[in-house]
Length: 73
Image 1 (cartoon, rainbow, N blue to C red):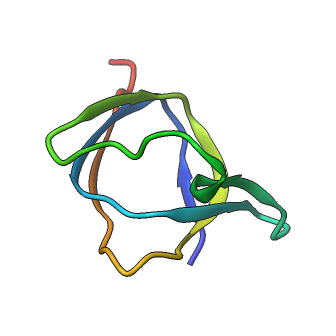
Image 2: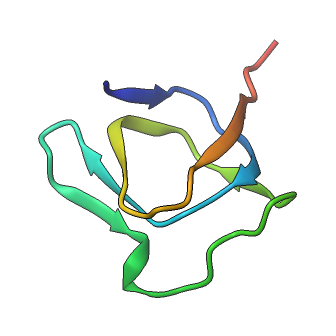
């Protein structure tokens, strides 16, 4: 299932694990296993608008994130 966020927004992390995000053509954009620290539960993150993409969970941990898009009024 392809996901798309048309507006910037906030992501609130409930649980998190490693993932691979791919564009609409299947090319890997981000592989969280390549480094960096994963956000802890309770973390809020700002995000820009995301074009069409998929997210593959490549971890034993479940990923649960609430996304809130900030639309202009």
